Amino acid sequence: MDIEKLIDQLPKTELHLHIEGTLEPKMMLDLAKRNKVTLPYETVDQVAAAYQFNNLQDFLDVYYQGMSVLIEERDFYDLTWAYLEKVHGDAVRHVEIFFDPQAHMERGVSFETVLGGITSALAEAHRQLEISSKLIMCFLRHLPEEAGYEALECACKHKEHIYAVGLDSSEAGRPPELFSRLFASARDHGFKTVAHAGEEGPAAYIKTALDDLRVSRVDHGNRAFEDPALIARLAQQQTPMTMCPLSNLRLKGISDLTKHPIKRALDAGLLATVNSDDPSYFGGYINDNYRAVAKAVGLTAADIIKLSKNSVIASFLPDGQKQNLL
Ligand code: ES4
Ligand code: ZN
Image 1 (tube, rainbow, N blue to C red):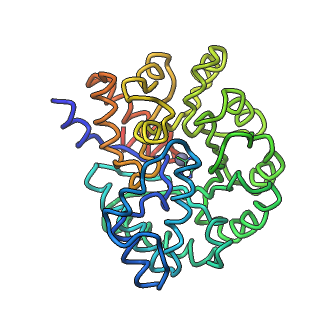
Image 2 (tube, protein in one colour):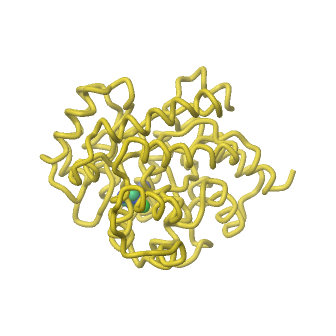
Image 3 (cartoon, rainbow, N blue to C red):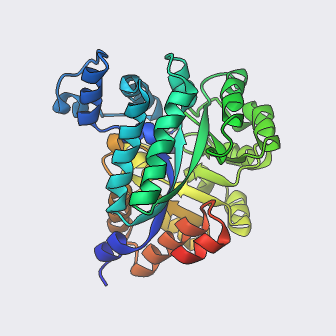
């Protein structure tokens, strides 16, 4: 079977996806109108033209502004449902979705409004699309650790809907160990942990994510390749890495996709996966990421099958459900 067909048809999971990063320009403008929010754009073309980034912070500025149109529970429902319908066509069978409650609560949108909209859409997707899911609540690392406790308290009231906590937003100068106590508290409450590390920050941040935050997965992890001992450890432990090729390209972590380390990761025996991160902003959903990186670095059919299996193995699904997808 050719590579494109394999990518389209293999059952897979998506493990690195910010739901706020699925907000398409058209929905952004429609919601701005519905909620009477003023944006600096009037047309889809103007929104799309703003999606030129030189680094992570450039993107985050646009991302936080874009999400200002999300106000009501149904906005979060519509956003999440549109994403799920889209990836149903990509043979995605299970999703583990990040959300950023602090970015909404600081605008006066309640935790329950955000969670209610997202979880209703996830429940509907389980019924209608047979897509299962877990939710990962991210702490914003540009804010102080103390600010995360409010979100953690909210999460504790909704443990049935939130499986893990994560760490996202600006990375440089904000090492994981700044959040050690918050993550320890989250673990004490029964949440699994993950963290963005080594996206822009150094390999040392991946180590402290493992040692201090006790993460089950590393989100991105690209800069691990600067430390051979760390690569050996990640391979030995089979710590999953949720890589995002088009994100790395658009945020200029790599100058061109042929330099993406996914093939190196597979060859080094890492449990690497392909994901879309913020598909609306970075120009592609999960299968677009698979296709683009496969072409750029020359992935074989065996590599593609391995990546789809890795996505299942790296998930938080119970073993029995993993077996159904392998
Ligand atoms: C993000 Cl690409 C990326 N990196 C860090 N934090 C984020 N939040 C949304 N997208
Ligand atoms: Zn991310």
